[in-house]
Image (cartoon, rainbow, N blue to C red):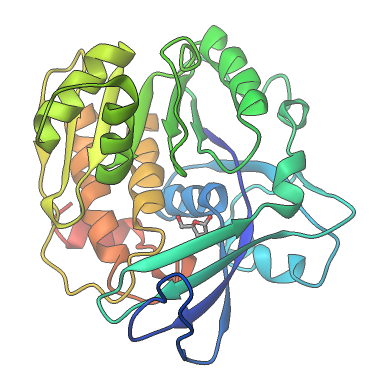
Length: 298
Ligand code: RIB
């Protein structure tokens, strides 16, 4: 069983030829409202990969809230622990350029009021998986993580958006997932001299004293930790929108680990799923099913 404690957003997405520079105005496509949020995205990606998933978080009581759960409900994600707060829902304002690269501004809304107490006392047992990111209050995430770790559950944290964290702050986590930019930010924060993705991930894993996985876009992913150095490839795709690809990786990784796969296998499936998620527009509508992951060579 996977519990995702995290953010639930509605993405307000506009396609542009080129994302604006500071001070610049650019014209874009008609906007679309697409369900997103790193927590909700991870939950859906894990569910589509075949896991039983419970999502814990908060939405507002505004008009946007209706759009936030439209992919999660039919997919069978357990939403019983999603609270409704008075006020706005989380919103992400996203531009996607011609190369499929994005810019994202998140307005947290109700996500800022997600509380550890929403996770039922018996929700996390030995062998279960807790999946976390950085769009809900970190202190609440770590309260849940401490409970999960004490119960013998694995705790996977995606440090997105990047926030500098110390090994002590990360104590209850088992696996830390970053993208290459977040890995570089971490390396700078710790003053690590390592250069190159593999060396940076190895140095980070030593510094944080736990498994670190870095996603590398078209280069796949690399991990370092007690399991040694693991590299897995992506599959070649023509990206149309990379939004949510990292969340897909984290969700699918958690799904395969939760069912007992080893780290290399789970990373390989996750890297394929992350590639597939770049081939369609939007975050959640682009996430592959387990059958699609397996058919693509995952
Ligand atoms: O990682 C992509 C997600 O980041 C988007 O869905 C957006 O809501 C922000 O949370």
